Image 1: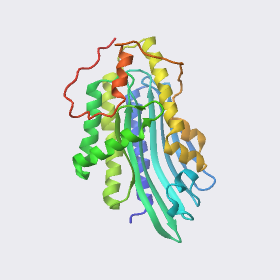
Image 2: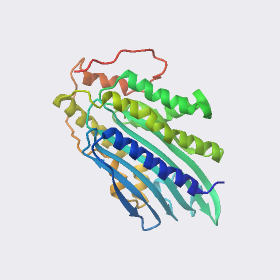
Image 3: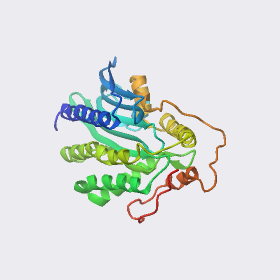
Image 4: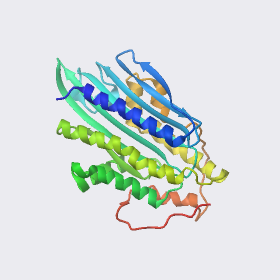
Length: 310
């Protein structure tokens, strides 16, 4: 089995490449980097871009952390790993655009390995990417899912895409709201069949993120908007906070394993608002979003029309 440092090398280059592309796309702000270390083992580098022309905040972190005891959220699910040492490497990003017509997005790719008495007892890959629009456009959603399906093609094609799309829809579900966090994408975990094939798939997902997101960014970043759209964006960001603090397993694992709190919570938006009992006006562009927060087969529904811009 290839050394975990091979995966680590890919992930550091991926972080560099995404940062460079996003700085170019923003055209104004640059990422600031924090190097950090973890007492029990490992560390990482967290990069944050703030107050840019396109992004209100964009965070992308690389971590390489290790320990001798799994946190409760992981050990309960994998009791066979009791007493094993572990190491996890990954890249995770969340981008919060300024323009309400440009979706928030998240991506993550990661590798986990556990050893006991010098022998590997478990390993797996995980990752994916998902899209959270506030004012969705069918063109954008179809492009996002087409890119996801295309990168799945060498790894089982339609079957792999369907399985990991469904997993994404099920994972990013706000159960107390009975709505998905956005329009989905791909999500997978515990992928441990053939190392080389699974590593290649993780790379395809990591590399495919920019192919999926940058065309949407270019289409929507300059769309005119007003205070109404901005207030709705801030309100809907509250749903993002709810999911990340209540349901997200990565957040829970990071906090329980003694990770760096600032880096773990970089996914939260810089500005957000809550409003009791908010209901969008019937027939409004804001009400239209609800139709997109249910799992759908985005690539076989035909060319539905996009909402008119204000």
